[in-house]
Length: 243
Ligand code: SAH
Image (tube, rainbow, N blue to C red; front, top):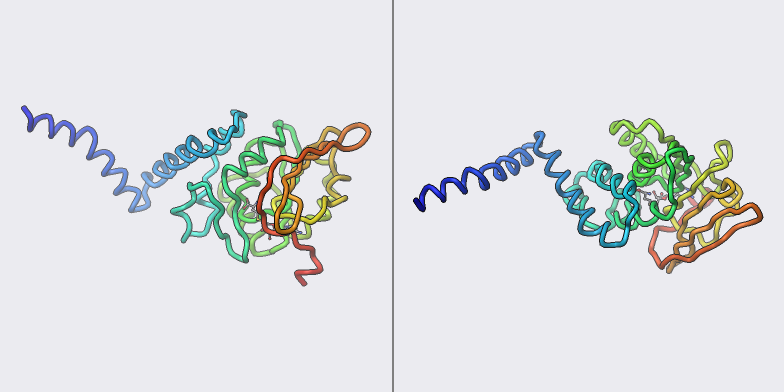
């Protein structure tokens, strides 16, 4: 009797999870589902407890495979809630901060969005899940090219990547319903304020060593500003400094 119970437990619980584990070690289909499980766990443990309530943002965080945006050596840590190196001295932001900043933009499916600081392309993919069109500017060319490739491999057709100084925005595509800056300038770039549509939202960290996350909204008559929290981003560099 006891033996039969042990055998039943083995068959029902241990063997199936062992096969998922073996499949994930061999990079088969099991790997995809193992990463899906990890990603959902990340959302349940770090994103929802942070107070993110927008179901569309939560769904996007469950959907976008962050492990595809981080270098292979760090892939194991893709679903831990921390920043990770992506090369060229840059980092992919912490997932809960990506979710928080995205939620603050209150995106609609028809919105046209600008991102400054493409980095790995992960934040751009999250935006692409929620908005109509995403335009993203990166100053480090190899990062821009890699992000463009990753986004194409994953089938994101509504994202355009450009190499350049995002301080200047993307004037040819303005106005934008939302602008997100993921590197910190020491003041709010005037071109970005100018390129907001009426009702448009701009979220960005501002400051040098310690930064504050600011949310700006363009109104019929001017701009409203809200300070959200203190954050740490890499600095926004200007074209002249990189030459
Ligand atoms: N959003 C990214 C992480 C950004 S890290 C992601 O999801 O992975 C900040 C990025 O901003 C870096 O890649 C850095 O090279 C870029 N950056 C810094 N200054 C910039 C500027 N003036 N214009 C465009 N990109 C800039």
